[in-house]
Image 1 (tube, one colour):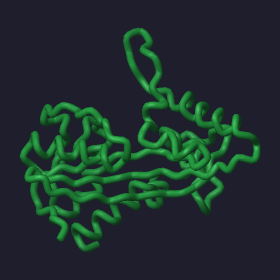
Image 2 (cartoon, rainbow, N blue to C red):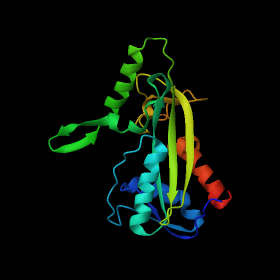
Image 3 (tube, rainbow, N blue to C red):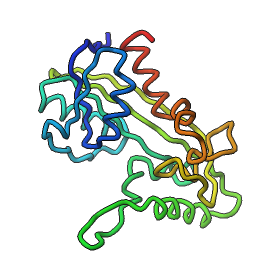
Length: 209
């Protein structure tokens, strides 16, 4: 039987304030006090896994072991069928740009251009099917864990459209829509996203909703 979360503190294995806020809002109705790994001064573990599940578990287990509290981590990315499911777990890495004036960063238009260039190199008839994946991993200090996988399918378009999303959103058109994720209002996107799918599964198993 899957371990169940009780009320109390839950470490969100992130150093990103925006992600903490988003996840805290989703879990607020269940009596959980969400605190970030960053606020506890926990280091970010190396994401050495080759799957979304592996990387999510690395982050959740590291936070749980270091804090002595249950922890939740996510890992997500874009997979393109014609590119052998790349970039996949390397979704963010494809956006890494060279250090510029001492500051590292990510260039998502560069990343989208890389995906498009590889598709074009395969020919005009290459299928453009793609999907976003999100894995949520819960871990407890004693080693118990649970994993929830979410997915949203769609196709890639070019050139990028919309200004409301982030990452690869401007080139991703979810199935059943004619708009990219970056053209869809955030509240509508969140209702159909890969993260929403994963959280729905987590809430169903953990809280019976």
